[in-house]
Length: 123
Image 1 (cartoon, rainbow, N blue to C red):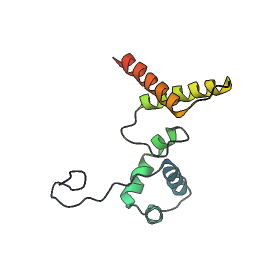
Image 2 (cartoon, rainbow, N blue to C red):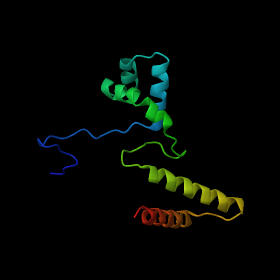
Image 3 (cartoon, one colour):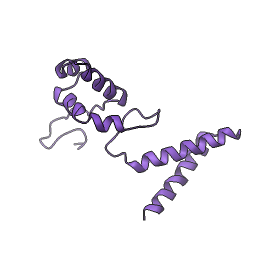
Image 4 (cartoon, rainbow, N blue to C red):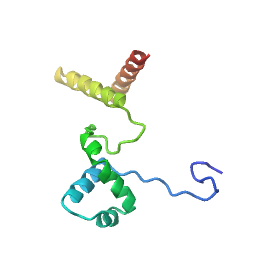
């Protein structure tokens, strides 16, 4: 009996579907243009309460500035993740400006170093 698949009653739970940042922005924009919540819920295949929650959190969602490659924001993502991501992007851009190539392995190594330095500065 896998706890990730079954709830406390032993019945199967529906898998949680995340909503992309792009979809959140579109939902907010459509609602601001006057599209009713029920229509948005039908269009995106979600419960109206989910759409209402997005609308209630629209100011916080609009303030988020994730990197281009980030499509979904998790509750586990913190400001430290954003800072580390920005530092890594600056490092990559600097390397590219001087003509150095940046492989995936080198990027991962640098990300680990940034993570360690951020972790040690938190202590």
